[in-house]
Structure formats: C-alpha cells, structure tokens
Length: 327
Image (cartoon, rainbow, N blue to C red; front, side, top):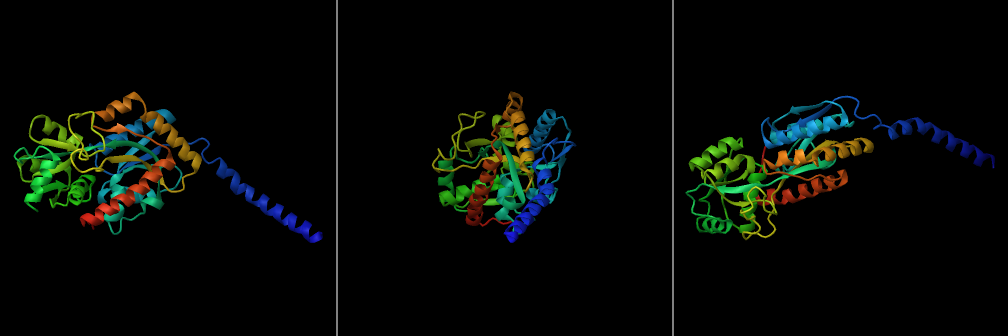
C-alpha cells in the first residue's frame, strides 16, 4: 500500500512538473502577430509570383494590423528562398510564397538544400495560374493535334524554350512523354529572353504564362493553340485545353500558396490561414489576379499540405521520364 501511495505521489509530481511546459504551448498564438511578418518571395520583382506575394502581404497586413515586409530572395529556381524559410524560427513571423516549382525541385535537383515535405508546411494555397502553348506564326499548326503530328513526322526538329525545370519546361516534356514525340528543349534564364527568340522564330514553340504571352498573342506575333490547365481560361475561352486536344488527363496548372517552417504552432497556423483566406477571397483580390489569368483558390492547411506531397510525387514521375536535371 505504501509503495502504491509513493508511486502515486511520484506520478503526481511528474505531471505537475510538466505543466509549465504545457501551459505556454497552449497559448503560443495568443496575441499573434505582435510584430511585423516577413513574406519571402522566391522570384524577382515584377513577375506574377511577386505580384501575388505583394497582394497577399497587403491583404494580410490590413487584416492583422501589422506590417508585412515583402522580401525577394531569388536564385536556385526558388530553392534559396525555401531553404532560408525552412531554417527560420517556426513562429509564424517568416513565411514564403511557394508553389509548383518547389515540388518539381525535389526531384530536379540532387541537393535542393531542404525537404519540401518535411522542412516546410503549407499554410494555405492562394491561386492557380494556367499557361498557354504558343507557337511562332510560321509554324503550320493550329492545334495540339497538328503539333503532335508535325513532331512525329520530324523527330527532334522542333525546339521549345523554357527556364530549365520550370513548370513551362515540364509542360512540353509532358507532351513529349504522353504523345511519344521528341521536341527539343532550349534553356533560357527567364521568360523575357525566351520570348524574344520565340517571336523572332529562333525557336518554334513554348509553354508560356498568360502575362508574358497575352500581349503578343493579341497582336499576332504568336499563335496560341491550347491552355495547359484542366479547364479553359476565362481570359481565352475559345482556346481548348491540351486534354481536349487529344492528350486526355493532361493538366499543368501552376499553383502557389503560403508556406512556413515546419512545426509552427497550430493556433498560429490557424490564424494565418483564416486571415489570408479572408483577404484573398475578396472581390478586389480576385479581380487583380484575374488580370494575369489567375484564379483565387484557397484551402485548409492540412489540405494544402496533402496537395504539396502529391505534387512532389507527380512531378518526380515527369522529371524521371523526361530526363530533366539541374545542378
């Protein structure tokens, strides 16, 4: 009996000793945010990802009453920013815009410097961006079916441009894999130089984001033949999807969201998720993103995390099949 009472006292003492550690953890998110938040953008100013980061920063700052500092940390196909955020304190004050390039990087790079599935966590998805397949007007094709037929008749004769390992690069590689053709990738450091060569006819085609392609399509310098997303775009409703054009199941839609270091306290994640989603679901945010062909698409943290992991696996298959690699 004495032994049982002594054991009980020891158990009670042990439980009480844990309380100081447990009580603060339960209230970590109380008062969050109490200082400015850093929003890391992994690509240069002026692009669609930068636009998204600044829009989210503005809306989040308005809702929580704190400054959101947008900081561009470029390089490594987005890996430099992601590694920086993965190593930041997991307190919710350092987050980033991340997306499909980071999922691709997990298999494209042998040493990206972080593990997207374990070192970072999804807070909420933000938006999806389709691209279009555009060709030089001299190329005698007006549909994906005609493009595939031409590629089959002249293996290796067609060149396409893209930044190595980008979603637009792998979109055409996926056409190669699904249609069993060989169109040759020409690497570029950015969309601007690639468009110069596409418009001049140095390369024949590319998958291009709407912001870069639209002005040239409208004046006839380029011919759009399909959109890469699973559904048609409201900006170009007449353009069929690649899936409608003979490659059933084809879907390359660039998605972006807010990510943070793994192990951010659940109540901080919940606050960030709620405030970011509320800001992005407003008419103003939707209208501003619509100008670049993007659609607002938010979700719960756990749902976004599942999407990230499924996308890592999906793009690993495409990278392996295409043979694409980056140093």
